[in-house]
Image (tube, rainbow, N blue to C red; front, side, top):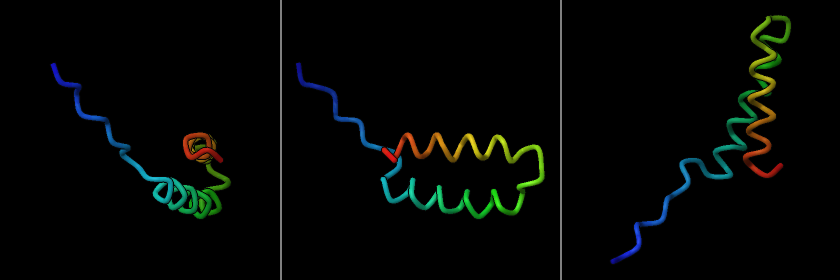
Length: 52
């Protein structure tokens, strides 16, 4: 019986960096809105996923 194919990463480290940069910009735009908290948490989760 052969092994199943290896799973590939959906996002690269570079992708995570780009997403974090976009979130930094967007967080500045929405800083006074309630949803900014959710985006700030997402920013930190992306940092954890990217090893930063």
